[in-house]
Amino acid sequence: MALTGVLRPGHAQIRVLDLDESVRFYKDVLGLVETGRDAHGRVYFKCWDERDHHSFVIREADRAGLDFFGFRVLDTATLDKLDADLQAYGLKTERIPAGEMLATGERVRFELPSGHLIELFAEKTKVGNGIPLINPAPWAKARDNGIAPIRLDHTLLYGPNVAAVQKIFTEVLGFYLVERVLTPDGNANAAIWLSCGQKVHDIAFAEYPEPGKLHHCSFLMESWEHVLRAGDIMSMNAVPVDIGPTRHGVTRGCTIYAWDPSGNRFETFMGGHLPYPDYETMTWTFDNFGQGLDYPQRKLHETFLTVVS
Amino acid sequence: MAHTVRIEDNGVSYTCAPAESLLEGMQRLGRRGIPVGCRGGGCGVCKVEILEGEFSTRAMSRDHVDDDDRRHRRLLACRVYPAGDLSLRVIGKLQKSVCGATPDPRLPA
Ligand code: FES
Ligand SMILES: [Fe+2]
Image (tube, rainbow over all chains, first blue to last red; front, side):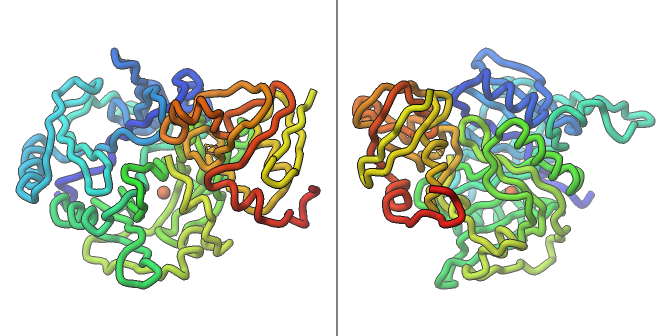
């Protein structure tokens, strides 16, 4: 099998300022499927086409932002091996017992030098996507509820020490560097896009003085038409839109950035090129960051660099 | 009925409906570069200090508004709703663009 090790983004846990308002937003506007609530007051969601129990969890807190971002790995042997590898590399890891999160097995958690908590897990109950595995239909009814993305695609995180973060992902976790934006002096990376499979990115980071910041969680749409439809639904519901609809130069993905009711940015995303691990990294100079962000408008939107949660 | 909000830094006033946040009203001034961020109380770019007047608030992130800020009515404009005429001072990242920039000629003042 070609795809081993870390398979894909598995979950994000996000802090919201008002739970009920946020549940309404994520269910009715973004169109996620609610799959459970736990004793800690967390609400669990999945995208309609995802098969695992959940990919997106929210909890009420007095500040916005990201609690942690988790990846599914191939199996428990892989989980144990990556845990040992992280420790051998010099990182402290923590085991979160199975069941702490609904329908989820043991998780290995560690903190990046950027101040973000990353988790790995091998087991999460498969609840299916509402389509039978025998003679499956191409879509289920849940596809038409709200924006209705098909999966949690990636995240972009802001924090310090991006060079050290890159080494952990590429040297320990088996990711490779797909694209990067150089700092103005050209001597370091201002932002990096990392893949663990053949997606254009599974996680990205940008250098930022404050640790642990969320730039956005991204949700995959099936087509450009669906991205435009997402824009319609945002406006119908007065969702604050940041950038787009447009196309990124970096990744070639088509996008809208907008904010949830607590100021956590999210993205409705589609497309992007298909890299392989042997491909050379593509590099953007800082003076072309505007095209990298918004290719048609060639504009380095101020909010992209300064607004995070 | 709309209330009048006065920005003490530059003496400019704008009207703001009770159901409208102070940031939404300020945006209508059309000054270029008002760094309108998340509009959900999460990012902190829209911080102001209320000098006078009655208002109500919605939840905002403690990362940007702590207890001391609250006591001094240093709040996020996107989460403050006027209950009467108000005066405020712009602080934080918003200051430069509200007080320094020229009005955008494409928009009515
Ligand atoms: S615009 Fe983000 S806190 Fe007001
Ligand atoms: Fe993205």
